[in-house]
Length: 102
Image (cartoon, rainbow, N blue to C red):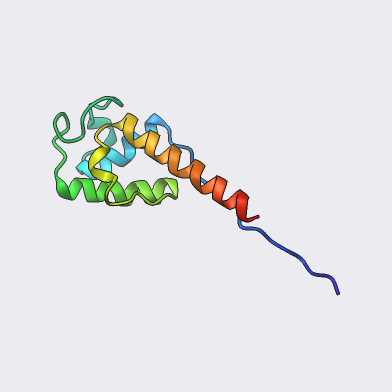
């Protein structure tokens, strides 16, 4: 009897500054071209993101990058740099977990 084993390997979209900008633009409900964005701007103080925008940012981040941002972590993500770091960390953690179960 021949058996085959398949392993689930997570594939992720790598976060780039351009993709982070697109997520933030969606969260702010503005066109990407109209957003004066850099990775160090504070979403709330510099870009005037509100709580609904923060929820949208979480959803769009999860859809774009295939990771789940935990509720308790979201208040600490205030810039594009912090969002990118969180996404990279979650992707690396998922890859290590997938490798351990293979």
